[in-house]
Length: 187
Image (cartoon, rainbow, N blue to C red):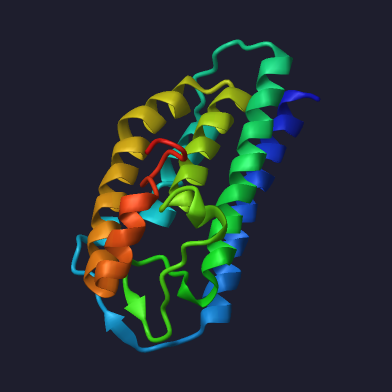
């Protein structure tokens, strides 16, 4: 596999997540709000903003030389992560949204990937960045993931947990007490 093919494969894997988000937005349609988050706009729009560094690093990777078998492992991690994040989105169904608002008919999902971690989409997105870093041999993406994506994700998780606690009360607190926020099996 040449470098161009590997980069295209990483990009196509990312589209699994993007297309899932778009399709779920269409499926969900317009619904009334039950609870609006009042967090900063940049926390509300985490999903598209977390990909901006990836796009920058795609064009300016500041390459590091890695053997092709290692890069292929990175590609496998990126693809598996994209599928995992998409699984999480589809598990939410009509409850999926980019913003941290709760809508009519919104439910707390605790099955599927949500049985492993409260925030499987974010785990998928962060691990996608890690896999893409290796696949694309991108020092820039590694640095951006460490200093921007991971801290940004931690802030989003904290804010989203607050919204879910406000909207679902004891049901969410029980869920949060039994399922780790980010890394599976860390209780």
